[in-house]
Image 1 (cartoon, protein in one colour):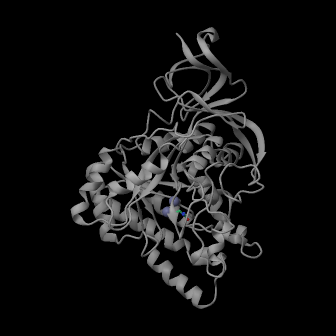
Image 2 (cartoon, protein in one colour; image 1 turned 30 degrees about the vertical axis):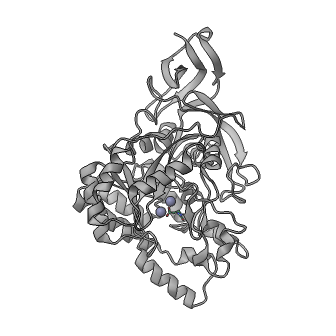
Image 3 (cartoon, protein in one colour; image 1 turned 90 degrees about the vertical axis):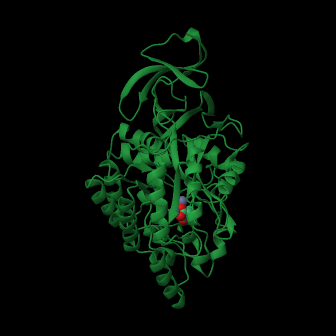
Length: 463
Ligand code: URP
Ligand code: ZN
Ligand code: ZN
């Protein structure tokens, strides 16, 4: 058997197993896995001695090149996917936004143009629905057929993205018929808006008020309401960027009742808290994203939720805005700070450090959270999300003991600060392969813009 590449001597880790094996790759796919494969039959050999060989990470929540809050997120599909690759992510699902009056198809076409010729890793899209007249409900079915098999709906941001319950229920009912998965931004936008206006009227304009005007109850209420709407519609629902214990409890209760309810959290909610906003001047703007940071005790609840499968995935909600010029747009009025934070690069290292080294869950659960479950929920499995003969050779050679300190000085995201500045991680990718070709080789980007492929996803089929 002739291989384009042989990965030799590593420990293969999937969501189910950990075992020593060589991996043979041909034509971009894994074609052999065995205890020992002959190295003479390979054009290129990578030694994985002392390393874990894991399926490439899948980040199902990113916002690259996204117009938002009067500006555009700082990473485009080139810089953002390069940073993702450095961190071991080989597939992402970004959000194509349908603006009011546009068709869903226009949103998809617009985001395809942003990504093609730039992405260095594989990519797919969810579609954000902001406007859904009855006559247009069938447009959702057409998108599902084209591989855009999930939609994000907002219960927050009134006047921008927020949908009323009737529309959410209609979209969920349509999803129940066409196999789409609804991703929900669950916060009670109406109540939050009132609290925000009161704060501004009292002269509370500093960045920390962004967090203090978005209570956990607003997230829990919307999480519970979205679960109720999904239950009535007979549809599955995936809660995005879940940040607090009260919302987690709603998800846990629903799952205990056997409902197809899923949720992700993000590294910022696992590693950062409201205390990070106690910094001088305007610096807390670096942590203005939605939902906001919470009191520190929520972190351990979220870690426990990941371990117990009350939460099924960790994604980044990468939505970077530079501190200078972009975040600074909100000086004197926190509502004008563009909402979002940069995180696409460090998801795997952070979750590995806190989860596996922190003894909160196993190595296999780690793979499940950052790759396998995202692939299954979003119609990419088994092509992505595992290591088996026939799957795409998207692989990470991961050094579990290498330590690094996260810093804006060394990261690859096009943003002038890091939310995780100074955090020490243990466990970093040494080499990253996409379709059997090296993208990251010992700290160097060796791929090409445009090499990432659009992935047409299958409809939701459960876990
Ligand atoms: O603050 C955030 N999360 N910005 C991105 C948009 C969203 O709601 O996910
Ligand atoms: Zn959101
Ligand atoms: Zn987001």
